[in-house]
Length: 438
Image (cartoon, rainbow, N blue to C red; front, side):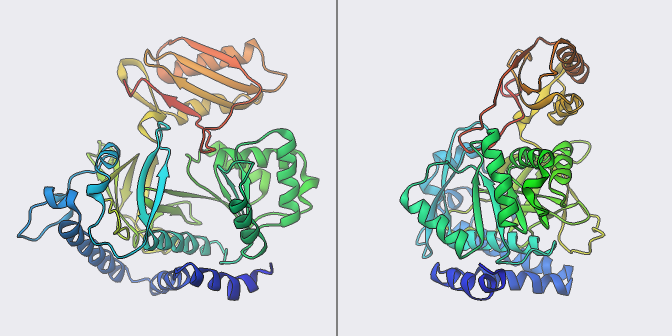
């Protein structure tokens, strides 16, 4: 569909039929942004937080039992909400007398153990409005063509096929499965990109990087097309992945950070800094270390059906008080690190970020893909997809590099494989440690 027709008629009609005011929410966000008034933003956030906490104290059994009544409350009066608590306290975390529409949702989590919970229409609508606002920073407008590389199965039921038909032909949104990345499928995807010519490519960075590598090797399939923007989400966007995508697709790459349970948390601007979706979430850093980095606690300001207050999302980061040169009044998430089991354990129990292993593997041109798992005894199992040039010399380079990174000569078992399958969600885990969980 012609983008202006989707933007002006079909998308607004679609949102009205779904009972959502997403475009009005987007307009409000952009209006506040244009005014550039940091004080107005702070005031809005504080009002939303105060209203949410009062709602929780009065209408959510879990919080009513734990937060003192009869006096003014603040965020620190609320306990940190753990993922296991959400599993155990499903009913008690739901708001009594909630008049909105509660929607079932789930997330696989870093361990692969599903977390089921309830979201609601307002929370999802404002989540989507935030996405659209951030994309506007790069010139992407509602209705522009978009391709998502996501964890969708190849085979779809009748309802899914009908939805994909509607999304593709009316809303200019196409979905490509992350589950099949065979050379034949990659060729289909790159050929489709050249034909559909999307303005935005969105999805898992590991998957988009594979597509970008294939596109770089077969540029004729793109027929001169380049996207305006690539947005990566749901996985850590390591520097080498960003560079592969940027070179292969010839477009700027931005990082989106969030989760289904916590909500959209931050998005990268053109200056390369992550800005909090501050109208949507309140972020704290729990027990920061000497560098100011600690576990991120996210309070979703818009989720009333099943409120998540001070929710430990499993990632680590640091906030910055410094303003960004892009001019946005939104606060900055200065550092973002992965989940607990994205870290390796080195000598004397010191924690080493998983990206250190990436620096070892990326220097070996024969490596196409890998998966590294550190076992409880700190030994390492490494699966490698490699070109024909892979051999003993490359293996020795990997082993010595990992020993140097960990400052310890742990056993390293290397298995060369033809393919590494994704998880059930379609994500690819590069590095995972069982040593920190023991």
